[in-house]
Length: 101
Figure 1 (cartoon, one colour):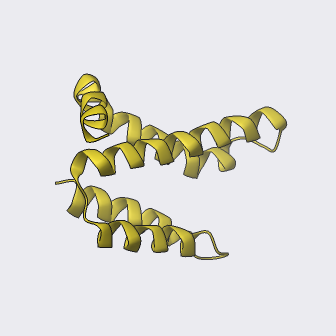
Figure 2 (cartoon, one colour):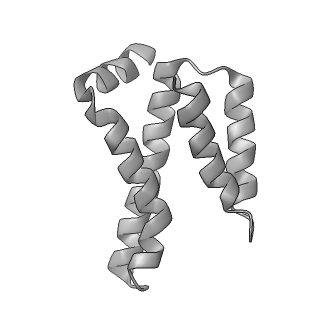
């Protein structure tokens, strides 16, 4: 699994980081840009799933310790509650600033 994830990251090289930012920012900002529609909801869902898949591949490639994964998952889970969305952004920023050095 680790070799497969490393191969994906290696093949995309510099674009890997841009892809992650695109998926994350698209997931966060897309609902504010597009009014509700069926196509918009499907596109948002694709961005959301892409962001999660990107994060899982990157976690495996970076060999992130389990306690960090559990902490990040808890932050993401709490961030889904009303008025707690800032935790999702904080989790992403902490991941890029500290874990993915």
